[in-house]
Length: 404
Image 1 (cartoon, rainbow, N blue to C red):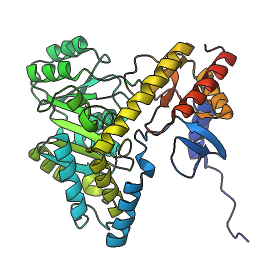
Image 2 (cartoon, rainbow, N blue to C red; image 1 turned 180 degrees about the vertical axis):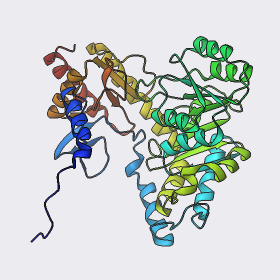
Image 3 (cartoon, rainbow, N blue to C red; image 1 turned 30 degrees about the vertical axis):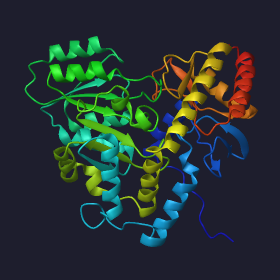
Image 4 (tube, helix red, strand yellow; image 1 turned 60 degrees about the vertical axis):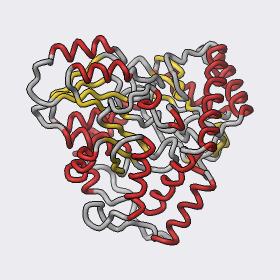
């Protein structure tokens, strides 16, 4: 028998939070996370219903890979379930160092440091290397973690139009005589639109105007470039990007983020990257899992998975467009289905789920108002029959709601 007390209502001081939530609900911007029962797979059970899962970042299906499972279990047996400390005191294990060296070799750079998440890797790096005297030139659709890092740095922020090198140069010309340091930063693949940054043009501008060049490769690592090395490899910009950020939670299938670059950059982040300094390091199982994932990625088996990912992506996009859906300018497995109205996007997502397809609706503030959409993500582990069935459901629900 429970002896707990009943939940207490919010005090008046927090009434404004309740009011804000009610406003979100009225605008169809309030979201309740669906609960996954079992494994993160292409067909999975959410809220008790089996659905075709088109909402996961699990690009290569590695969350359930047998090799990664074995690596995690063996690490727990050998080293326990936790590291017990922050990296800068007693929490740096041999496996952490080995993983960082492995990632640095994979990305063809001098050094690497692993952060506790991709978000903290971006925010912690930008806020560490810049001050209030410096300048940031940022793509208008950069990830929230970059935006937060920019704000934390207290540097002056100038935003250029999305993927518009001419507008970027306009900003750089206007600030050509800036006395402090300058950082030019972009996503490699943009998480809500699925398009790819024009790195050659931006690298050229960073060199012309003496900027530090930074790329967040979260959605391109394991997806673009030779064996998934990312947009820098995809565009052959090795040696032209000073800071490469990546994630261990998408194609790699685990959790964490990393920063790659020069030895001086990484040593500096060891001393000034606040999330790195003040957070307990990854448990041995996570580190071993990531090592196994990079081993797999840099192999023929990894090549096959990436090829399957792109085969599925091209098939799904081609069929969606044929059905009349607007997938914007996506160039990757991220497939936005543009709706515009947030309420209609929410209805579309709910109806799809009821019919057996899970694709989340995305609205403000994740995307601008009036640009609500569904965001589908295709993976290597989807069977062609999964995608064909999903397309049938898209067609039926799309016609019912007069979207197509």
